[in-house]
Amino acid sequence: MVLNYIFIAFFLLSFVIALLRLVIMGDVEVFPAMIDSTFSSAKTAFEISLGLTGVLSLWLGIMKIGERGGVVDALARFLSPVFVRLFPDIPKGHPVTGTIFMNIAANMLGLDNAATPMGLKAMKEMQTLNERKERATNPMIMFLVLNTSGLTIIPVSIMVYRAQLGAANPTDIFVPILIATFCSTLAGIAITSAFQRISLLNRTLLLALGGTTLFFATVIWAFSVMDKETMDIVSTTVANVLLMSIIVTFIVAGTRRRTNVYDAFIEGAKEGFHTAVTIIPYLVAILVAIGVFRASGAMDWLIDGITWAAAACGIDTNFVGALPTAVMKPLSGSGARGMMVDAMTQYGADSFVGRLASVFQGSTDTTFYVLAVYFGSVGIRDTRHAVTCGLFADLVGIIAAIAVCYIFFA
Image 1 (tube, rainbow, N blue to C red):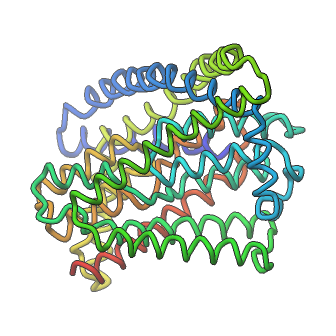
Image 2: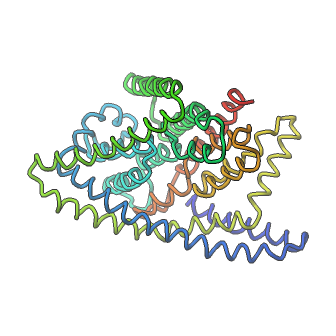
Image 3: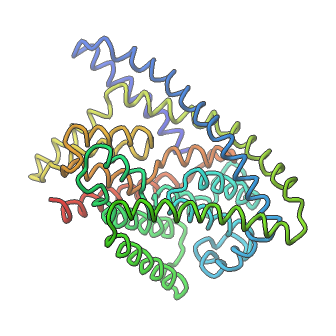
């Protein structure tokens, strides 16, 4: 229901703003630009879905081997004490627990190609527990908020962009990103728990969150003492070794259980192809709406309004130059990446704006894209409080990013 209102709002606001630009400013290019954006965005949505087909087939095939080999069940049993409290509506020891963990771990390591198929697999498994098939369940929403909060340990791609654009120390945004994304994730868990009446004040969750905080602190310290070359080598090596280890572990586990590994892979790969086709209309809908919103100039008006409001309140406006990245990130990952590159090109990679744009890019994920793809893959139409919780986590991530950058770079 919420996505329905957002979809309508994007088009109506875009039309009104474009009409004002045409009538008042004489901008005769705005409507052609909006129409062009509908075609280009639809094409992009299809290309993304097409590109996902092979990756989904690969990883859902691997996941099927892991299921038959008992690895996913083992992970579910291990994580049951924490997940039974964070996802109380999922039966204790259900295999989806292991799939959820693997998706979150892949996201933390920046392994998007592995994280998305695992996430879609988790959604399908949670849908089997859903009595109202078109309405999002509490576990689905908690899972998606964990995804949209963008918890990432190793933001390699952002550091690579900074290096290409001439940053003296491309890794200087590493610690600020970790802090901002961790704040975003904690906020997402807190607000979703409030909506779902989940108490976080119990021994198991406090130990889990405390242990996670300690782990992040250790990772931050370990990477802070490395130079750029060492950090790139270590982060890339760890990510790829872990990914290959997962594949080999699943295959070995399947072999030990005398599973026909090849047949299991083919069965899972067929699911991947079907899922890729299923998400096409949902992805077209959200990306076309976002494209029209950008082409109409509504995004520029929004940023200008924030600048005026900040100046009127006597707030320092140095952060405003990076805001297009923050505003675009919940809407489009590629759009936000383009905004980040544009900010670093215009202001300089080592400028306050350039660094803040980089931290914005790494602090949250593409909320509307994630919701459209994940909910679309299982036919969910009533998203309940998912959008509210996801956007709240994004807002906290944005505020944390600004605060951290003023501390580190101002």
